[in-house]
Figure 1 (tube, rainbow, N blue to C red):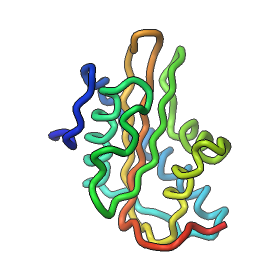
Figure 2 (cartoon, rainbow, N blue to C red):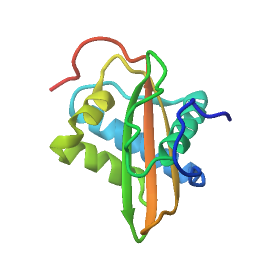
Figure 3 (cartoon, one colour):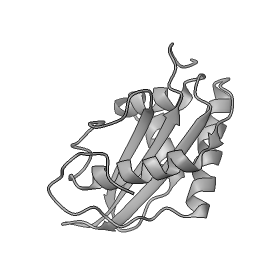
Length: 149
């Protein structure tokens, strides 16, 4: 699938999205949503493909320097980046959004009650210093109003 238009400084990392990752992503997202009174999400194959394009584009930049640049209108996005010895999973990303005050915007997007569908993707590979993992969750419809407390 074609990228979303952002230009990076290096090649995209390889896709590391698989069925186990997608199940974990959906399970983690819905567990946290349930804890905040938000209805469960359904995994949407078209949003998975969009998340794959977004994740590849983000990995063209070191860290999360691209931010949410190029995100299509009406779509929410939560992004995660890790550098270490091993590939990271969806639970690591959600825990980061949930536990880290600097990631509160990503958590807010995850919990929006108007959202009914999500997509998720992961890329991973050797970066300049260590194994890098990028994870993106996308949500639609984004809707208005704050997430539940």
